[in-house]
Image (tube, one colour):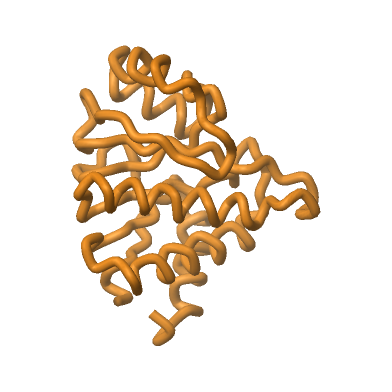
Length: 174
């Protein structure tokens, strides 16, 4: 299965896949970082559709069209803000990845690209976040053959290194 999970360095807004994931805020109305970049690249129609969704709770996910993006869909998920790890942050982050993959499956997506959720302005420790992400994705893919490939699209080398290490550490468990 290791070929089904890949780690790359790149710009998530440029990926020609079935779905990209947006590390959104709960309003779904755009923000900074990945969220802002996706909204800018998709065009104003994305914001218009997001306004109809009535927000999204942390750990949950909602799907929209990709509009001007090369991706067919955008799956929006608000990740948890890191507050020391005592407020269910680990489970909420895992839920983000699992709920995005469930939506992808329901919408016939064979390829899904994720950013590093919650590790920017939400300050989730990258080492913990990378292991949670890779483990959750691997567990989901074991039971769901309809998704052929999931990639972690990392903005910089440091982030890529953490996700690659987490993937390598799983090894044959995939």
